[in-house]
Length: 197
Image 1 (cartoon, rainbow, N blue to C red):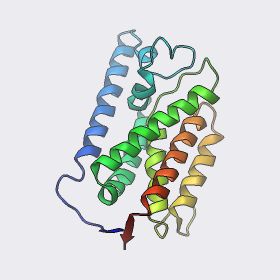
Image 2: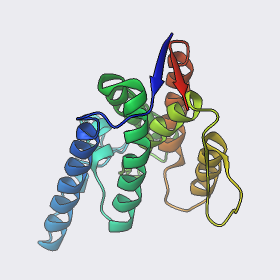
Image 3: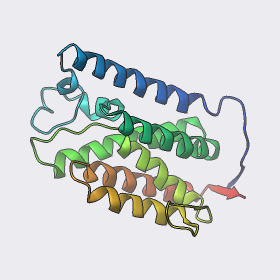
Image 4: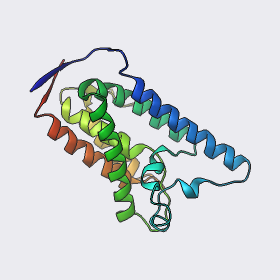
C-alpha cells in the first residue's frame, strides 16, 4: 500500500490544463461554425442514430460543448476534481479514469437514451473523476450552496447527480456511466493508495 501526501509538485496541473484547452478550442470551433451557419455538431455529438457512421463520437462528444455556462461549469469542476485526483493517482491513472469514464458514459448514452437524441459534454468523464476521488478520500467534506453544513464528497456528488437527472435535456445516462466507472476505479485503487490528510 502506498501513502500519498497532498503537495504541489511540478507538472501536476499540465494534463488538466491540456484537457481544458482542448475543450475550449472545440467549443470555439463549434461556435464559429455555428456563426457561419455551418454545423459540425453532427460530426462530434454522440447519438445512437448516427453512431455507426461516426463511431469516433464516443470520444469526441466528451470534448464538445455549445453553451458557455455548460463548458464553464464542466471545466471548473474538472480543474478541482482533476488537480486533486491527479496528485493522488498520478497522470496515467488520472487520464485512464477520465477517458474510460467518458467512454463508459457514452456507452450508457447509446444504450439508455432516445436513439434520436444527441449528447455532448465532458460531464461523464468528470463524474468518473468525482466518483474515484470520493472513494479514495472518504473523509473529505465539501459545501454545497445553499446548504450551510459540510458533507462527504460522495454525498455531494450523489446530490448533484440527482439534481441534474431531473433537469430536462441533461444526459443522466452519461453521468451515471461515468459515476459508476469512477466508483469502481476508486474501489480498486483504494487497496494500494491511502490518502494522508
